[in-house]
Each structure stands twice: as structure tokens, then as C-alpha cells.
Amino acid sequence: TMRGVTVTGGIGTTSEFRILGRGRCEATVFWDGVLSTMDDVNRIPKDDLVAIEYYTTTALAPVRYIMVARNDCAVVLFWTKHGLRP
Image (cartoon, rainbow, N blue to C red):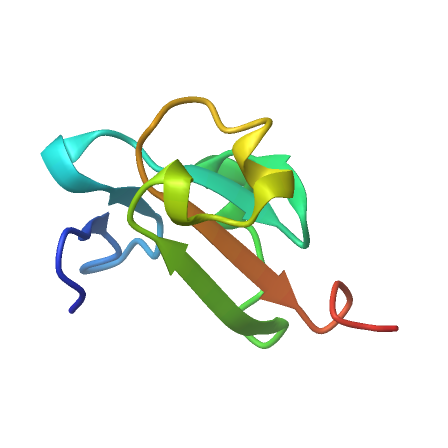
């Protein structure tokens, strides 16, 4: 649990989920630093996922992500083994 975060789905037979920020707005998501959709993120193999960063508003996110955020909602960064390679 994290204050201001709502995760929907991912229960039962499906592993697909959505992340909603405060006010139930849909978070802007990035996969290995690239603007993505939750549909894309739901396809990340679980064994490849190594880190998730969550920012409650775009104002708190790193500048490079603020510039392309879809709204002033939460920003979530999903990092895989492949994206963290030097």
C-alpha cells in the first residue's frame, strides 16, 4: 500500500492491473524510461521487473518525465533488467 495509490485488477485469473493516482486519475507510466501504456506494462515478464518508482504528481517526478506526462496525475516508472544496463 502507498498513500494516494489505487491498484485495480491483478486479482483472480488475470494479472493485468491499472494504477490510479489521487483523485482516481490514471497514472502516466514509463517502461525503461519510455512513455508507455498500462497495456504495455502488463506485458512485462515478471522475472524481468527489477524496480518501480512512484511519484504522486508530475511535480515530484524527474524533469525528463514531466515534459511528456499525459496529465498532472501520478507518474510511475517501471524498470527491467534490460533498461538498467549501463
